[in-house]
Length: 626
Image 1 (cartoon, one colour):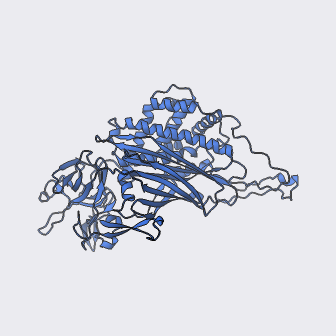
Image 2 (tube, rainbow, N blue to C red; image 1 turned 60 degrees about the vertical axis):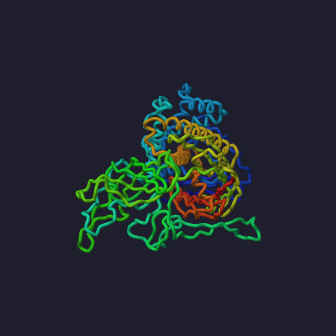
Image 3 (cartoon, helix red, strand yellow; image 1 turned 180 degrees about the horizontal axis):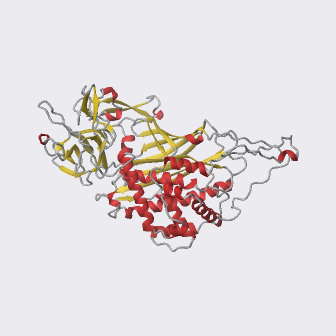
């Protein structure tokens, strides 16, 4: 939409030239640049307290925008972007509003974690308490639709005060259940349901199983259909033999790299048509595995794990099935009706590897009750075997560090200056033999860089997380804001951010107990759960500023790694992972490998915010330290 604005006069420095008037000829957002055309000095920055303490200055604005700063998207634009990308409401962000409201209203805390937060919130300096009060008022001014769709809050201010720690935690557990299920089975209806019956009458020359597995944890198997030539498989889908070597033998300080070749003999699992070995993935006991295939046609489908010789362990496990109900059963090909039985069908199944399962190489077979019209198929109908290797948790120590920030393209205004504020919150988790997930002590890193221009690189080196040896997983939430560079403004944003991170850490600690309830135990355990806790926190941090702060979220991300993942990234047995991308809200995240050696892996994570044309990159380093 086109907007026009014109001043009534443009002088050469006289006082009249400093009295602009504007003629607006259309509706929509408009940004006005305050250029210093006057001979008289500009007024000093206004106070950072709202005119009425705790009351928004305007929609989504609890602190003034400074002269000379880049324009920020208005609240309406931010909420529109969130409505477009929010499939699961952020109960974490909504819960923060409940907690702040209860604390500022003097409600007695009703749980230890809430008492910890109330003490922290009530101890804030007056300006910060006013800011928090203003953020609650700004939230209340949102439409009922936005409060419900984006933040999962359906009541009014009075009902918010009546929210209890248990009800807040339960809402967050429900959010995490939805995120875990969507992550494992994709968006849409994730209710447990069987796949469609695509069985056919076996003939005298039919030897292949009619239950097939296309992928194991996202990696394609030899059964993938249509059949792929060996060269179409990714290096990470092939069993590899890797050898470490120095980049420059004359100068070892330059570091090393890995030379990897496909394994073609003594395959531990299945093979491709040319004899190349399909990769056998390593997993630790107590984690979840996701299979995608065809003819998972009953919710009573189970998974059988059978140890290969000399092992003797056999376990038959329950599975959670989300069948593909959308892909048609048949299609017409050259005038004949045939079954659709290739990878267009995505029946999905997840199961948990028992926490007490002995280590070793295992066959993995899907057992489907015979719900077909063909008794000759047997009962159950069993898939061809895939393979997994159960390994003990790594004993090495690892470090995750950020190295530099590259502003490939800052927000698309040619004037004004901002700084970018980046914070990482790393939370470790320990998975015990009973399958319980316990969070550990969080580690935080904050960096602020002022006057960042496009194509500029800044050294922001710092340790994001260092393992102690007891962790099973670590989740790192990453959030980056473009903010006004004036110090008082930045302090306001920093105070709010620190309060939110304290809340997030307290929630995660409280979830350790909440997830032991019958409702919580329905969650997929282990790494997928830890992953989606991180995703939920990163999304909540972005969503929670949209309704009150004139800042732009330009980085939103969550990195979740098991110690086994860290061992593979920093070890000499596996090639570097392939590049990939995904979205976090309105931000597209692109991850690309930079270098891999026998003890270190480096990658660049890029963040592209299309609505506001920003493009930042962060370089991360993963190191095996012991």
